[in-house]
Length: 150
Figure 1 (tube, rainbow, N blue to C red):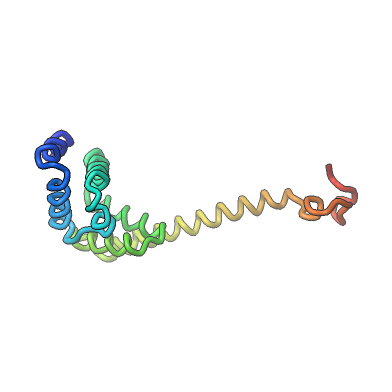
Figure 2: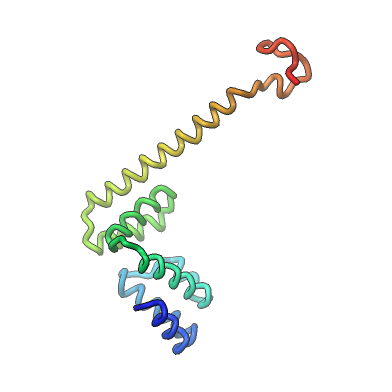
């Protein structure tokens, strides 16, 4: 369905009926309704615009549904969002993605998170080596610099 078709359907049905229909379509597609969508359903304007945004991203993507879901698994794992991760693992399984591919996405996410932690921490460590805590805190001379640095 095109963006214009989605908008026309929402306008024709009204926001409340459109929100209900979208929830049914999501459940039909994924086998369940994500918690965040359940939470948003009482605010149809927010819910509908969120779904329209999601659909626009997927429609404009050159990636297939399985690749998008593996990315969703990896990002959920990297963000440590257990609710998202469980949902996206179930969806990936429902799409027929084998467990070894889902595990590979999780391992890649873990590797990137590990690299991010190390890169950030080592940069800060290098920056902190340039700061003398004694000179920074005390008003007198330190053992390293002799005289107080100005």
